[in-house]
Length: 233
Image (cartoon, rainbow, N blue to C red; front, side, top):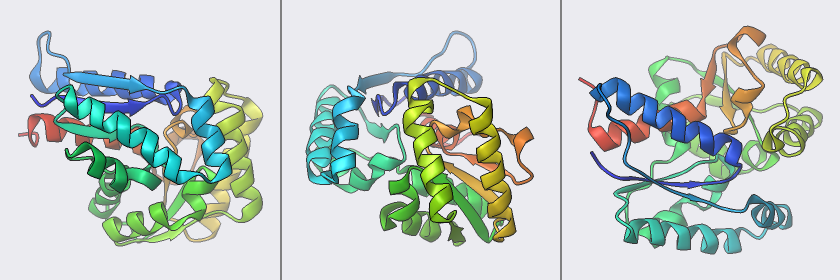
């Protein structure tokens, strides 16, 4: 079993899900008392969020690159960045670490492609929904058209992620707001929705939406376990 390095803490709420899901998947694959071989470096998210807000992606790349180097030096065979947004610096982190990095948009795109869907709705932080680093990679790996909400809806989702979900808060009114945004994505022609923020599964559930959901947290974990153990028989 390969040793998986997790760059987490962005936020710790979803990093805890990564730890739980990866261990559960390994246990299901191997049985008995087996669990995953993991290294976790969890950052203090507040300084990272300040760099995001300032658009200082170069400093973000330096910070996460150094973490990647440390995980690789500690023996990690592969890396995961446990957040969609910070894949804006994924290539630089992989270059700094010198070990394979499983890109969350690539893994999700493959899942969308396997489902045969042509138009994908994307929810996430403002950075993920608006910048090319994620939308173009998802489109390339899925072969699908990527549809994002209008600006007002993007602002609502971004606020809910940072002001509520990253603080562990799940509010009923925000759940309803997200469900309404998904409905409007369906009206725009989306055939499914990619939950392009690792906190969004906390608030957007299958029972709340008419569209199939692609949980990027779980998909990323599944890709990591397949890389660590080899493809499932």
